[in-house]
Image (cartoon, rainbow, N blue to C red; front, side, top):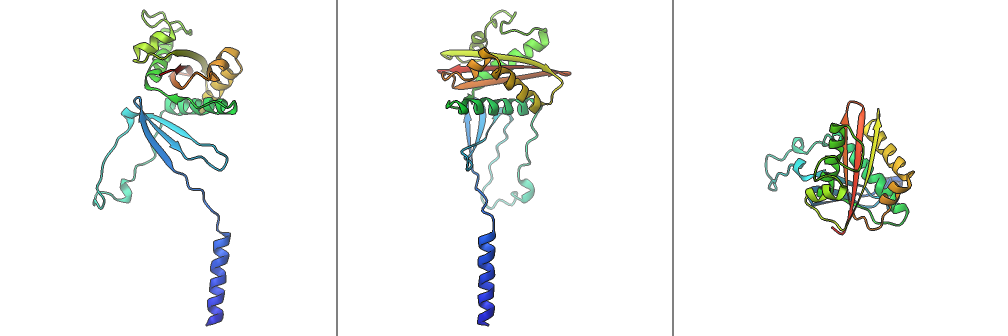
Length: 218
């Protein structure tokens, strides 16, 4: 009997020692300027992920502990992201990845900058032009569009891009790479004064039009 106990104890020790240790990941959810922001805890290399979703698309429901309605079937399914959300999240990730490499702080999505960026992309696509200057009265410059969206930052800068025939993730990578290869656009991405950003994606057929608006002093 003692030999059996010793063998079982040895087997348990061996299994415990050989079992892989899984890193625990936690998520922090905050609401800011009309956006829900989900931030993961850093991994072993100090990297972390940030997801942003407009608050209007978030459904909250409260249950009490022990509520019979709460069953495994009630667990929220993974949300189906739109092409725009996939693209915008990837551009944000790549933008902050480039900033971190240069020792800069991440930029966070701001609701007014997001509105200004989306509006400009949609307008360019609808009216058939490609420019930082809008032909629409009162919306001429990036700062005008941001103020119309409800914010008045101390600094505003804007990147735009257009491409065809790419999936959202591929288009996002191409967009940021082209911006980083352009001195003016690169300067906007790596501007230490920029603290917030809005990313607007518009698509018609195979044509994709993008606007990225930075703001500081918000």
